[in-house]
Image (cartoon, rainbow over all chains, first blue to last red; front, side):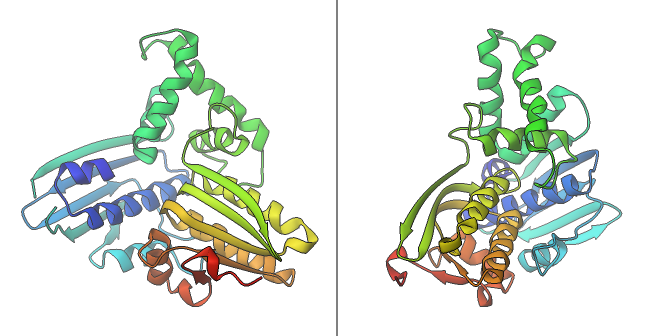
Length: 95
Length: 206
């Protein structure tokens, strides 16, 4: 994910945030025994969009006082999660 | 910035090659490197023949060594690959996480380097609980200045460890710079109010 973000010329800090988001989504899918994930990264002139299909749940772990949904929303306020599809749209900044 | 798109599909349930791809996404180039290194001792150049996947099978077959207790055991690739890292054997050595332990007064210091995520956090949890299991070592300092990435799995280990040592009358703190990934995550989750953080190990009281 970090490589994809860098390839698209995103700001390094945003690359790290997207990497964390992808990591959390992968973990969420693994926790839920999801059979398959699909990641799609799109870069545009002003924003990057990460779409992930196959994430059934964005809950948390017993040791954390917040859910992954809350964590990811804190990173990306525009995050949406509907019917297993997560869409994150972030202002891209300049590399 | 440039424009365009990158698609990656990850099949978490299909046989070997798909599992390698899942590892690629999760671990970026490092797991690809690991898988390739596992395959090489078999002496096969290609990667699509069944015999080329011996290393992957070996990794997955190691699941029996960590049966239970570590969580995430339902997913074969995650539990199998985690096994290599937790055991610190040749397959897992040098990948992602290093932990050194030293004593500073009443504090047991775990110097951690690398990345803390779903894949490596069980190893950290194991070492942390080992350190806290010693009666006189219920004070644990996690030196994370060498950590370049941490996700909620790592955060869970820290919070779980904090609960554990406090139940034993001890304490746990972390050492990480203000601009570190951990500091950002702690702030983001408001856990900076619960987890004591030092910017340098030199601040540790005896």
